[in-house]
Length: 502
Image (cartoon, rainbow, N blue to C red; front, side, top):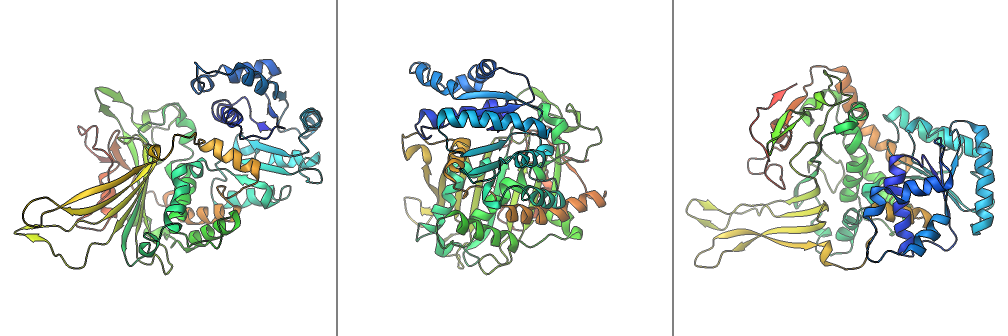
């Protein structure tokens, strides 16, 4: 059951993902999909809206299209129009669910997916509970909630508290589509299934860790929404903190949801808080400015539709922080995320310490490069291990080489996309890739002093950076090293503008 079914996320992502699972025979035989929203659609009109959307059409194999399968899926797809904030209207929901349950022999197993604005996250569970649709006396009931899960620590705690009045924690699935990516999941396998990595995965051998999330698009028409959020809330608090947890967590006692999520919580609790007075030296925020890329004029952030002309909302954030435990003591973590950067990429870079003695010298030329393990989360998912090799010929000239692996080389089999994987997991009742309430609160607890410092201290600068570059130049000062800086996966596309402070 998808609330907000007429919206963009449901039509573009969720229902096509369910259909892909159906085509690949991942779904049980007894299932149905009920879309619920305020918009007035008949079943047929809603099916047409879904099946004729560009995203749905793009996913289909035009030469091997199975029309019978599409018809059967359409038969299982229905729609109900209600006022989602009116409790009385949920009597219609209960009646329709009973009808579908009887027709498709579902056994009372219901998933409620909240693809709605956040202000309904408390209302819908309360309305479902008012009609007994949260109880598990017949079949299980699961509630899936999209981000943002709260706007700050206080609202996240209140939301957790209020939802738990109606649903138990083990019924709640807080979805983070980043955790559905194969490479994020493989972080755990890389670490814990290989004897060559885990012995080195600590402060004795690792100099620092970098995480980069770059988007080459601007905020475009989403300026009104984004101006109330910003990069810290939109990307770092959820997606990137989860990646940090995967990289830093201790080995779980078992590969099950409870054990893995327990270790992630311990890691998040170990992150050293950044005090308000230390925010200017540990956190850099920026906004993209007007630029020209490949002869195309790119608007600055403050020129975008819905954005205030004096906005201080960050489209770029870079942070330096530490994890206070035995494994990671004194190892800096550097994380950055931004819009209007040169390319779209998310990757983790583990930089190892260089050997203690510089052995290979040739006059003034010294090989003193750090080995790096680069884990590419998107796109072109894979891994690269960089290390030194001798250049053929006399002497000991050393050159960096890369040993690489791409996921596309591993299998020709169909690999479910992020939403497909996560939807399949909630059907199975596997919460491993879903955020638990206490972890969400811990992530907000780390972010809270940064948000307060920005709010309370207007002297903290917002640095401008031309669209198409790698963010404010000052962000390079976060990495305290004479020989190392941020790894940029590609060069800047433009360099014809001056940087500024806003």
